[in-house]
Length: 326
Image (cartoon, helix red, strand yellow):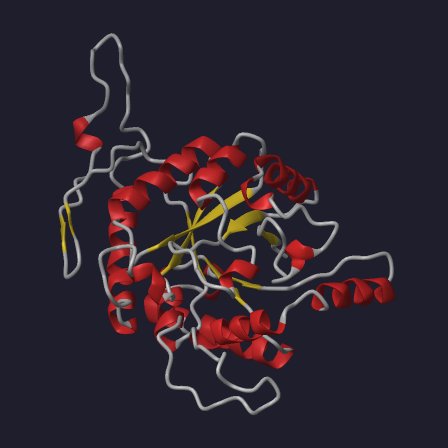
């Protein structure tokens, strides 16, 4: 069994920040994150995971959720690498609003800083607001995002292989810092990117940091099967979880991969207390803190970024168009 701790400073429950036992300012409190990381490591968790979006929602609903002030994941995990010893460090980075060279360099650096514990959660971004922070009026279409993501992954992993393990001789006597025969210039020319290389970071302890994804659409699952070592998934029943597992494992052979080369990690929301009754009571105390309009906004977000605010709370769910989500 592999265990990962999905770090959200004030908790995953949308109203957790309002609970009297929760520090509302935890999003920018490094000591709080350090405590979470060290507790998870002591409990023998395998990895920490930090999600990300390159946009901050605004408006009345957004102002009622603790989702707008938090550390950039790679910065946070770099700091946490200095106060932990063994636990994995998985940061989210989008392929839609990034460049491969930057991503390759940052994750290779994190892998060096942590002694080989870095992981990249590859996402394509699913929020239209992100586009407006990068010179676009509209979000990139679903098909283009995944086409770009496949090539992005190819470039990043190619850059990670820029140097052999023993390329940097650092020989003071001969005056040669690295062996030029042991550098691989990428020279990538593709539909979306032109990247010469090599990376200006030596090959990291893992060689290639772990690649993680959470794709759920058809094209998203194919990208998982093609590129990922770990896939996150959130299912609502045992049957749907088993179906996802069988489907994703069944796609691996098309890319020449063995079924054991991909770990499937389902998301679980856990409420801890001394007894089951107390746990249920604690959960209900969180539920009571949800404002109805926030709950509706969260539902719309989970369904694919739809605005459901104009529909009656007790009415039927409206028919929704196809989504540009993952």
